[in-house]
Length: 238
Image (cartoon, rainbow, N blue to C red; front, top):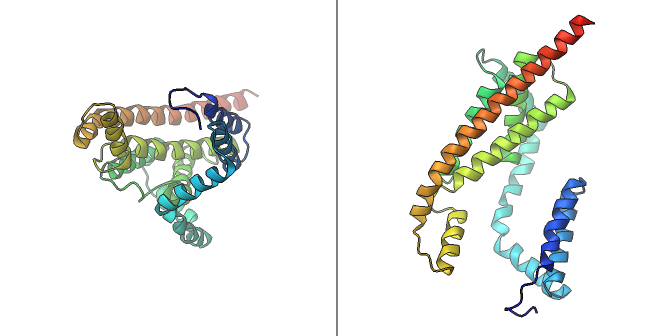
């Protein structure tokens, strides 16, 4: 084991492997596993100790894997037309557009996260089967059929909206793990803070994040419209 007084930077190789792996678009699961093994070995752990750590972490956090139980249900609903029904439903709103729908989803995601309901939505539960098809339908109301690149960008912004709503909303809930982690970190360094204080200080950040990302979504819709208008003008000139 590395002496407690020494600073060992070699475990940070795992961070470099994660960055390189995602930059090279390698399999995320394989990248994370390799990064974990490299960091563990660089920290001085043997193979047996690494396996013991992985097993302990799995046992302590197995409740987090409960969301996997939702995947068969979502897959079955998709097979019977959930995505198509979601697209048809959002297309029926006359005044709905891409920015309005995504900002509304951001508000709902952030408010539910503030109330501690962090698992009522997510990429597997809502983004893929509901929010992404609805975003595509809202975009197609204004733009017509989307190109593959435009469709990917719409899906990416929808997934990012879910991430931002969750990340900045959950810290406002006093009993969430992130708040308790921050409180524990400060306590270990001699700074006594109540979880309620941390949650209240997270509120301005959450409001700022909502305003900034809502503006980004509005600008994204505007960029799509401008791109289409430019393309239409070029086609007319030809």
